[in-house]
Length: 193
Image (tube, rainbow, N blue to C red; front, side):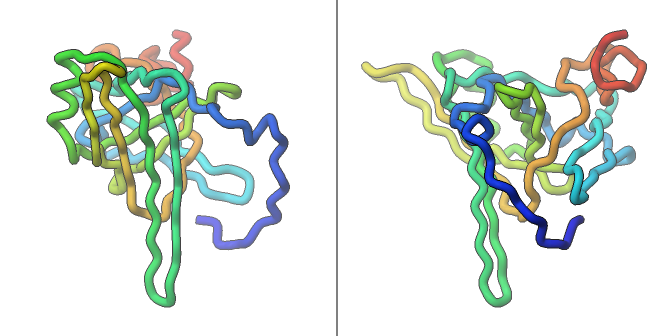
């Protein structure tokens, strides 16, 4: 972990514009993580990243959620007192329509998960939560009225950990387990066989 105060330049308008989170997010059940093979996490002045997660045999792997366009949001808030510190990382978005899959997911409120967001401009993945410190599916609001049929879902993590660039793959597992090789077996994370 980096314990220095760096110089921070102002971001250009292109870098700070809104609606950068792509509407497809990826959710991984914490129970799918192989805790005997934890990924390398790098936190330095030059890089903040997590290597590919190794999944247990039979894992369902990363699941894609399609939020309604431009509803995905991520907020990180923190504060410190004399002897206490607190932080909350929140990811939220709206899933349109209704389905058995959505209802089955909503019943799992409280489930520990890791969440990957894809940047709409760069295509980079950022991972929220980490082994031993996952996000939690913390809230939902489902409605069916004259305006729309949809559900707002929220994931939170109350640690000081900030998101990392995810170097693994979020492709569905092939053959039962998923490391960072995208299912192609060569270990490079791009699924190119």
